[in-house]
Length: 219
Image (cartoon, rainbow, N blue to C red; front, side, top):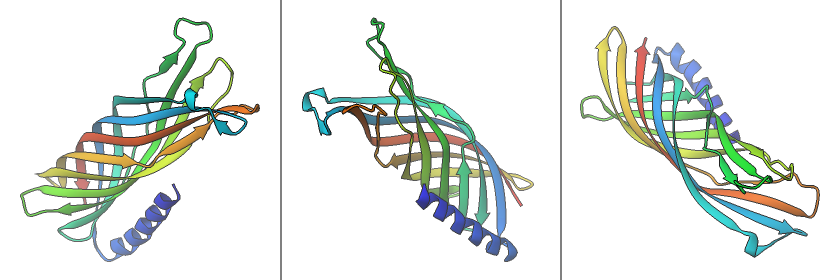
């Protein structure tokens, strides 16, 4: 998150200077259809040491839809800098263990405040453009454990790249269609158990892909 804050701060400072220099701003709204996957490893620790036989690894994927808003600053006819923010959250499906047992465990994760700073580069192929960005998202653990223990929340960052096409309708309004791929850093969280026996969950290989339709107003 700290890296993203630095990038956003630099973008805002640059945008203030750029607007005063006469560069062109744009605002827009987007609708995205996305799929994400990751590998989760649950490890049980006793006395600070992992119990190897207790390790469990699961690979999962889910699909979701979300809306976002963005602002963009055209530096010239080729390059624009932008900031995209998803004001809503989206969740993984709930994983249930001991399903037919009174001591059920229910676990899911919620993703919130997905924010991306990016550069958009037009290429000489009609309205085609390339996109390169850096994203951050909060990962909120949601669980109902029979033991009563809970897990902490984390945030993760990652790179995103994509390809898009824009078509101008008129009066500064255009529509865009793009596909993006993302990869996020690994995260780890431990249960809040006060005894020597604790559980740790490590999430790795987090990747995502999305298709997006946007409406943009340029000034």
